[in-house]
Length: 101
Image (tube, rainbow, N blue to C red; front, side, top):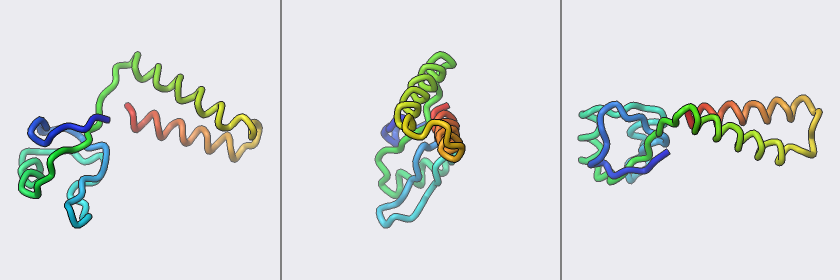
């Protein structure tokens, strides 16, 4: 994820977090793709910056996955062998790797 000024956003960029107006209404949900019209709307609503999904190289993704696996193994060390906790750990791993791709 990378937060950038709205002036630097290009059409086709995907947002990593919901974009909300000052009243809290969602203008574009997480994962949405920006186009020229949406960028103009955000400027008109005085949205100054957005958080975008960044693409990682395969090497960066592998390093992230290894670091995440190590962290999860440490956090779940007291429940090794518990099928529910192992499933939860795997779901967290898959979710975080997917969101960082």
